[in-house]
Length: 119
Image 1 (cartoon, rainbow, N blue to C red):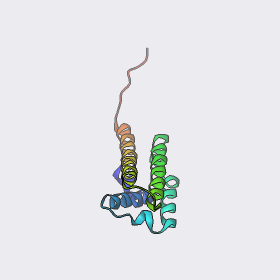
Image 2: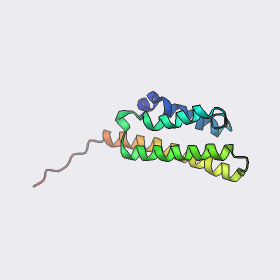
Image 3: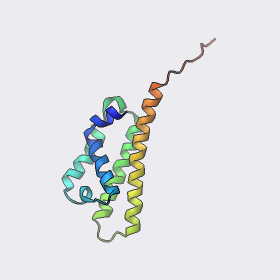
Image 4: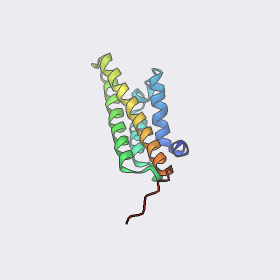
């Protein structure tokens, strides 16, 4: 799973931005809107073939939605601190769920389940 994720550029860009978000760095979400939008769109369109399954696509769609929501909340002047923190938590959970789903896929593939012969 690590090799797949390391080679997936758009995932790494988003993961780095979210890691920076944990440190209080909001530049990715506030600075260049075109970089943000292209990174979020690339996340869905550049899924590596070996992990391009419906459960993973669903988690990525959720992550994309949460990222767009966070970007909107951060750039609105009327957003409250509690609202921003809640959306940030949702983004952290969404990225964690994407990573978990990818790990589950590789774990399931690695299992060698022997089925009993049918009579």
